[in-house]
Image 1 (cartoon, rainbow, N blue to C red):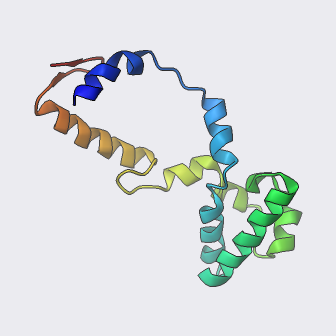
Image 2 (cartoon, rainbow, N blue to C red):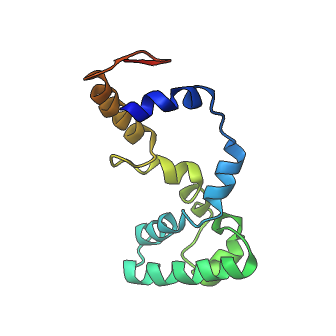
Length: 134
């Protein structure tokens, strides 16, 4: 709790470079799991989907592209199961919003974590929306 008081000034003035954060998340194959889920939801057994996504990631590395930068033709060359709706299924927005467990980045999950942490802080701290006051 003491660390929160020390970081209060930093957090109050922190600015996020959303474009850089998006590019970083998009470039790390964070949506590979979602691409595998897409295949499974389209009837591909998981063991096969896992192998297909492995091939897909290797192809992306070789082409220096993210999964969502591939054309539908490139995707279909690896698996004919891919259709135009793959792009919605693997968008960063979709990937984040589907993560709903506590600690995950989905909006509802984050709201729950904030609620839990706010209650924890209220045990020993008076808090308002802008500042923590001991």
